[in-house]
Each structure stands twice: as structure tokens, then as C-alpha cells.
Image (cartoon, rainbow, N blue to C red; front, top):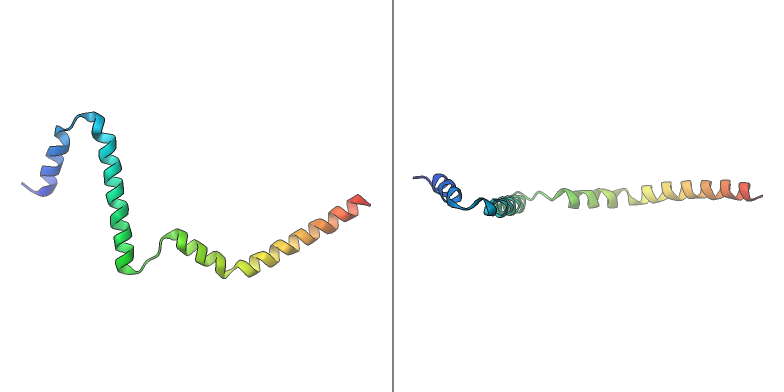
Length: 81
């Protein structure tokens, strides 16, 4: 009997109330395998890539925000007159 078949047989023997825990454990193992794969291949999680991308364009984004805010302040000053 293969390990997969034995695993399925053992899961089938469990009461249904434990299926949620089995699914959570499988999700944990998938996450762990993904982390290990990223470690081995040098890939970075998408959140790390997003932060790096944001930092790369931070000055440009800040300049754009300052431009928008200065225009908004100018408009608000005109309204206040």
C-alpha cells in the first residue's frame, strides 16, 4: 500500500468532526512547502516584492502626492476668499 493510500485510509477512519482540522493542517503543510520552495529557489513572497517595488517608486509617488495636495490647498485657499 502506498503512503498516499494509507493516509487516505487513515483519514477515512476519522470522525467527520475532524475534517476541518485536517484541511487546516494540509493548508499549513502547503504553506510550509511553499516557503521551503521559495527559500530553495530564491523567490520572494509577493508582499516582499510589493514593498520593494513601492520603495523603488516612493520618491515619485511622494512627489505626485505633494503636487496633488498643493493643488488642493490652492483650490481651498481660493474658495476661502
